[in-house]
Image 1 (cartoon, rainbow, N blue to C red):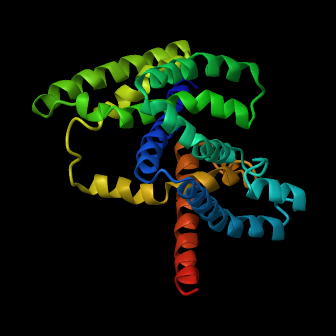
Image 2 (image 1 turned 45 degrees about the horizontal axis):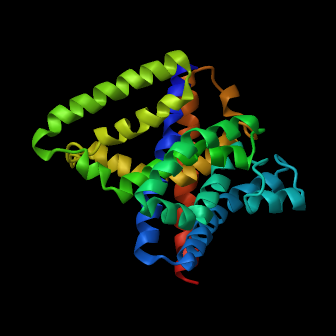
Length: 276
C-alpha cells in the first residue's frame, strides 16, 4: 500500500510534463485553434483505441450497452466504463484553460501568485469536493502549473550544471529518495510538490545512454496511452487477477495483454486511416 502511494507520483509527473509541453506549444502559436486541434487529436486517439475493445465487450455481453452511458464515456463526460479514464477529463480541462495559465505565468508576479494559490487554495477546495472531474482538476493543477513555470523560467537549464552533473545527480536523487520515503511513511500528499520536481531533475543531469533498455522504454512510451486506456478492463470487466494469486504474474498478464491489443489496434488503424 505504501509503495502504491509513492507510485502516485506518476500522475503528477505526467501532469508536470503536460504543463511544460503545453506552455511551450501555446507560446509558439498563441492560437486557440491549436488547442481545439489538440483536443480533437486526443479524443480521436482515445476513440480509435477503445472502440474496438468496447464493441467486443458489448457483443459478448460482458458489458451492457446503454446509449447514454456510451455517449457520456466516449465524450469523457463519465468514466463509468473504465475508472482510469478520469485523467482524460482532467487533461482536456488543462488544455481548455491553458491560454489563461499561459497569460498568468508570463508575468512573474501573477505566476508566483498562481503557484501559491494552486498549492493552497485549490488543494483546499479539492478536499471539500466529492471525487469528480472538478476535484481532479483542482487536485492536480499545482503540478500542471509547476511544469509551465519550469518552461517559462527555463528551470531545467538553470538547475543543471553540466560540469557538475554527477554531483547534482547524487543530490537530486538523494532528496528524491528521502522525500519518497517520507511520502510512504506519512502519506502526506503535498510532499509531491517537492518530490516531483526533484524526481524530474534527476533525469536531466546526465545524457540518457543509447542502450537497449532506453530503446525499449521509448518503444513502450509510444504505446503507453493505449496500455493505460485498456488495462483496467482486465481488472474490472475481465478480472484476470482471479487466474493467479501471484501479483507478478497478474501484472505481467494485464500489461502484456494490454500492450498486445494496443499494438494490434494501432497496426489496424494505420492500415485503415493511411488508405482512407
